[in-house]
Length: 223
Image 1 (cartoon, rainbow, N blue to C red):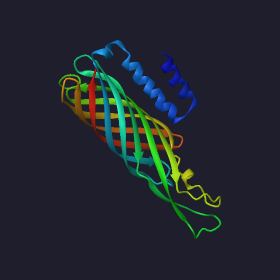
Image 2: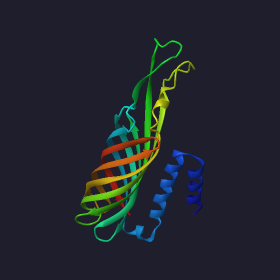
Image 3: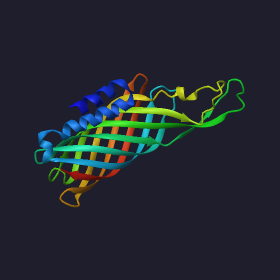
């Protein structure tokens, strides 16, 4: 109990670190439930995604990125075909090249890079066509995401305008999506999984939408 309170305290003290900590606390609550002892699986996956950011304002161009990441998840069995669980997902976007402009010497632009990292929390319900944790499945999930934007190699001279601030897509977003995949049994306690997911989230201020299409491979442990 003290461990959970510790993570809740972190959540209210920091920004995205708190989001990540609270999601771990959520997984721990699931793990300590009575049903988890006999009907649960822990998963670790690697992912590849294609992410599109669509701004509603005409003066902001739409953007698309490739992203690699990792996910940690927990599932609990409820009935013959249905599982409930949660996933904590981290993604690293491709760096975006950009140019810093000086208002003193506009004829001497300097290149730099914009880096994006995204954290996703996904409570998920899955339906297995055969039995829970076996074979084909489809599912639905809610989504809470936090996108961070940082720069590297940006000139320290104050005469250069901070172009990064012209992109307001960093911050929180909520949404949902669809997932599907296949679980293959390797042993009584170990499975391998292949899956895809399609996620959509949006913000009203500023007004934009993000599409996140992922493919992943993972290992699942029953306990």
